[in-house]
Length: 285
Image 1: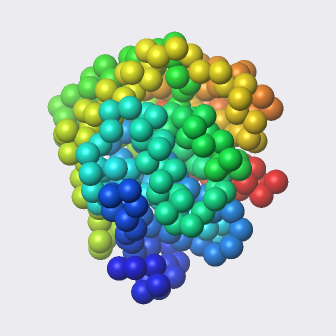
Image 2: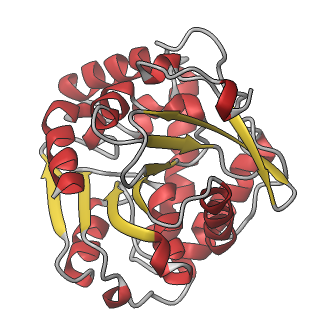
């Protein structure tokens, strides 16, 4: 369904999936919120598709901003083969954004998406006005190359108890973390119709290869990121160690850092009621 034919949605769970073709790739995306102003483009995490965004984060931001989520090349409903480099993913993101006729956006990036966002600014700096980096780390950051090992381990742990791997990867395995994990997974199921295609094993492996290469590469010069930047994480992130959020904060000039106590990789989802007002204020400031 084209954008012209698609009615406005009142919530992310109801937002129709649209498509646009650029550079030989047809991108699946959803959008929500008022037209006009600077849109907020959301960059996905490892093995994520359009259904993996928390509606308690998307919906409040979309009250004031046009929000756009999309599947990267080869993922979910987007065609093509998943790239095995972060830089290629960033180029694809730029292609998608410009295909929508946009020349300036805010970026909300989580986990792998945060790596792609950093590369996007490195290669296409004029495209981004403001940047939110959640649960992510810098190129060449200490411990980045271990993300794949932790991911496989937690997928196995989840399989043994027939749980969604995100319950292990995103949340601490204490009482509060387990409750937050269950609530998060339930929220992701609020969309009943028109759900996205699952990510393939091949695509997942290509993403992990890209993360490993990003972690082993020479550290980036983050002083070149001049965009206002908000960095957020839980203080016990096992997947992308929390110290890497602190590293980003030290190295990105003028950045702001918020850390949520006793929470993991998905700290912004566990503490969405506290985080979303901070994100909204940052985007509006």
